[in-house]
Image 1 (tube, helix red, strand yellow):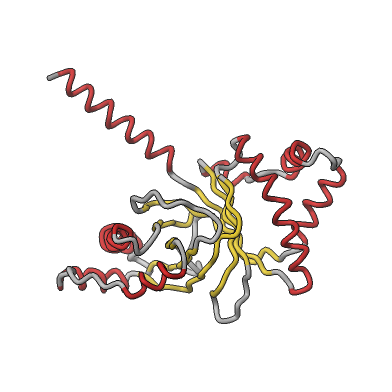
Image 2: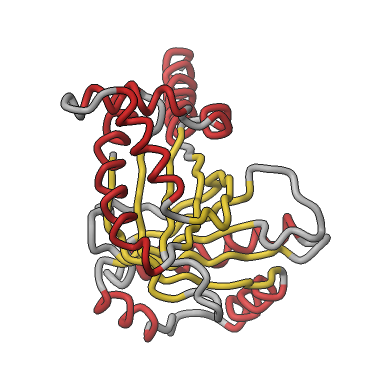
Length: 263
């Protein structure tokens, strides 16, 4: 009996350790690119992809995505967003310094010298206007083996929890909406779902406090998902959904297509 108890404790510890290692920290960078700079920015995007692959190999980051935005705010102020994945908040806040990017550039572009690489990296920065940078931590996700590859669709839903109802909102996402999204996934109507919380302190004037990421294989799955209705939902379930909706203000939604993915 004692051996069985010790074995169960060891399994619980390993499970907790694995879960802790899987926790993601992400930096979202929403960008505006002027019409005249679009071609230059696309070239820089391809240039940066190989450098970020090296950064993943070196352990500085765990991934990098490049998304093109199809819809968003009424003003259409952003055209692209990058998502950089980190294993811990310290790495996330430190980012990758320019000298390291140059070092990795030397390894993947052996025909370029340090001065050329430095200029190209700086040109990549000036070819777009970094309008918004958000530091987020993942606090919940659905169970799925969904493959992130170019062509995948996602909606980034930015939320602001109602003041004084922060914990209520997070509980609603995990206890009400997450199971609902899991049903969609189990019925092949969705690829995956994640709940993120801002990783930095914020006040009552913050534009958003949370984000949900909803993934779809293609537009067919996306539109089929929009038509899905949980016919088994009880009246109590519907009331729980309504309370959850009242605990947050949905600021805006971005529909995006994955163009580049590095893991």
